[in-house]
Image (tube, rainbow, N blue to C red; front, side, top):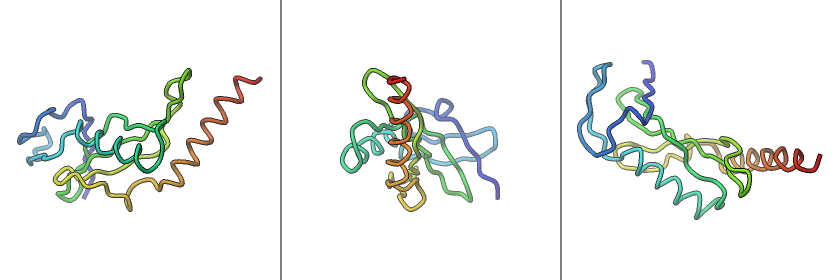
Length: 124
């Protein structure tokens, strides 16, 4: 079965039944906004304050709806340096699916690499 990816800008912002042109019906208990909040809270508590959630995409695969939330890395004076990973959030119960998401150490490695690239351009 194929995966359907729907940009969050096309998904209603409130909790309600939704219908897509691909004829998938379902109730989203967790909105894109709430998914971003959960990722931001997790990142702040367990990883660091320079990482934040980007705009999520809705993924539907084998009847399971989940939000794929990109993790962005930003630094003061430079803004957003790029995406360093993603978290998957269950669209029904809001659980962060860490085992299916980018590992924290990999996120830190990507962020460090982006920081080195950004600061090396400043010194040159």
